[in-house]
Image (cartoon, rainbow over all chains, first blue to last red; front, side, top):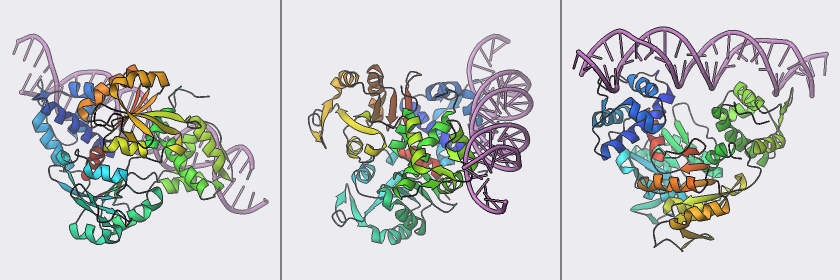
Length: 206
Length: 206
DNA sequence: TAGATTGTTAATCGATTAACAATC
DNA sequence: TAGATTGTTAATCGATTAACAATC
């Protein structure tokens, strides 16, 4: 049962738990505990148990959690027990790096198309992907039923690109442009802006 | 006065405020209000006023905030009223994209060196920067007094790279490797992992 | 002046932690 | 059994919001 009242801050920690559990599984570890997981992630064991308990009892008293089982359950919960097609908009350095990044394949995602508005880039290839014109963005994305997109265009074009994505039916946007996007309430946006992250830390430097 | 008790969650919003104010300034707007800013950022006006009030009174009743003045103040608070040298570790697609990214220059940062352990990459150039061997990482970074680094290496090397950075005196790390790092308490880490961000959103997709 | 908006307080809301019975 | 660890409750802690006097 997916209850709507689960806090978003809890949802945001699930991928971190999953990633660490996958690492444990990769190392051949079969069982772990909230204490061990918390230790490795810098999170309290109580918080991990509380977060998981929103979704069901996954552990055994005295024993802990079976790593593979918990991985499987978390993948189901986050719906990454499948492969989501993802569109990249922008075929600059960043867009091309994202399109070629090997880290998506085993985590539920596949980049299936890339767009740019620069005629010098259209019809060039990034790996196996032919760069398409943003003119065709809306048709291609809605035709393919793509729900997830990564925006890697300059700040000045990001809102227009976002509007086109939303019109095409995209419901989740990972935005690399250094700008806050305006989207309808049913569209999710996550922000990645390295300068913003760095500025968060410079506050603490002496 | 920089009081230690200011919540980190407040600090994390300051760069967002700054970014939006810089955009307003760029558009030639001279005055704004907590209401307008909140509207644009999807944050309540009360929260913006409360956040800013940790650092001083910056506005005028009835009028709001002078954009340029608030930009200036926020830059001082976050210490980005200067230029921080930043090291990039990893000269793969991502590391090179970061080293060439034009978005740092006006936000307080300059990439001043890039490292890789691949002999095929060492001594090649990324823009003006010569790729240096990770063998020299510790000496170069401590010699130059660099306090900020971005880690763009595979997950398997990220902790070792981090240890070297910490030994060299780095106090702020922006980590692109999909792994939770272990660092001393005086070292700050921010995480950017696109797959994690995407997984956060797939939970909500239907 | 009248209208607008700040800075701040107190109230509300939500998240984290501590503690422990249940039980493997 | 004895030791360990979960799942859950209640208490604590912290963050957000509402409201408004002050004042531009």
